[in-house]
Image: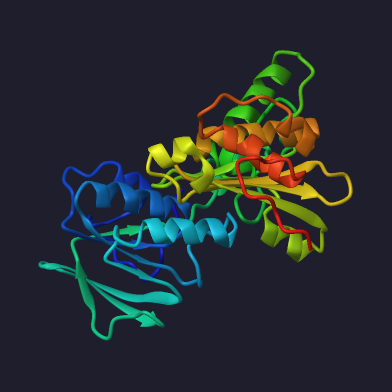
Length: 325
């Protein structure tokens, strides 16, 4: 279920992501509270449909999942799309009037006076509904936060009851839930199966798309993990140039010792379609040579994954040679 912010009044003009899909008309002016993936996806949709959109985010950047360099590309490409993007800014009060929703902000980018909106989308996250479905009546253990613990076969503490999806924990993604459902169904049918995915990809279905999987540079740095990074700029991709997407890039992250792929980030059109190759590379323990020596079709955006691998071992002929340190 969507998280309802306590300072928001109950009003038909204040919706969550589910309500945003049920609107009968496009609002003239809209506020999106929360600069995460869901909020930005909805903001993209409604701005494309003609709404004037403001986005407010408490933190100092949008999209907390991918690396900052990908977010910067996204922000540059969307600078014209939204009226205001207010970072390090809080929504502190909302007054529902007949003429609109009047919102007061506090923070670095906060307007001095309340601002009127026709619609507010609250996208400050989702919470599990484990404590709302009566699971305890069946003897199923529910955690304090509402998640239901399961084992690798998706069994709860009651052996014949399975649980999958958002209710069993992060990340709350449809493709993770589907994979878990396959495991649960196979186990229930008597087959040997377990959820043992090494990585789960994330995608922001915005314009442009941003996709990432495994380690990001920020995560590796935070954990003190030694990595090598290879980035292929789409400005060197003929297909990207022809598609007007030369701003994008494909980045691979390798373990500095084993040279295996442990992460990747792609920003640009169809990034979500392309990240699957990086997922497979990680699951199979592939290194830069494995990917770089695999012939990719040309000219495609997908070949930038292979080119990023070539960058890693210095054999990419589509870029000027790197200067030796």
